[in-house]
Length: 322
Ligand code: DGY
Image (cartoon, rainbow, N blue to C red; front, side, top):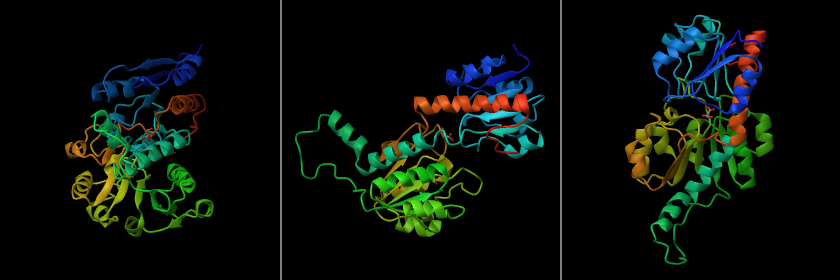
């Protein structure tokens, strides 16, 4: 048995991944405390372990990385890695890895759950019924927005954005998209039309965000762009909270400029803007985009495979910084 390597996991993740590490004979320590783990505990782990499996809620910044002594790999249990200073990790020759592909379908499906929940007022209708207000079928009860024939605006046509658009074809929607570069194969497949972001927000009935969080995408949907959206449009965010100026979104919702919003992520996660909680036309989810049993198992295996590959072969399966 090989117990040379010590792996620290900042929160309980599915056994599927832990098993792979244990089969290798590694010593695996799983933190069972708060989310996120305290900085003191994180510093200790970074100093004493060969590998770290962490969550998107763990901030791995320059200061934390300065404690690393023998750390070889940080495997983020997420596809997004904005929580990690990847350049600093690279300087210290520490691999950073993520979990791409395996969560694409689950996240695209959840995006659609939000699109349909907001456009057809599903959560509001459920609340209505539970309050005992359903007195019989009514011609104008809880009327929603029809999806067919409407325009879906995808912001960020990476794996998830494209998967959301593919599903939109089945709903007979028109698709427009904005991305750092145009994607001819995607256009061919879905009939999507490339637009600048400023154009996209003015033509889309539903704007769905799928870009990573970087310094360039903080408040990409700022006040101007939110208010430039069509009156009665819907905003969906399953990417990262800070991509949207939440204060401006609240204002647009309260003024009735937007039909509604579906949010799986928040600007100051896990805090939710108190005004959002009061609004009936928003559906709020606790960051569950990738939360299916199958996907979370596969993410755990993927994180473990990355750890094993770096520790055994000095190469990562899904590197983001080398
Ligand atoms: C990610 O992976 O970045 C999602 O936000 C959580 O699965």
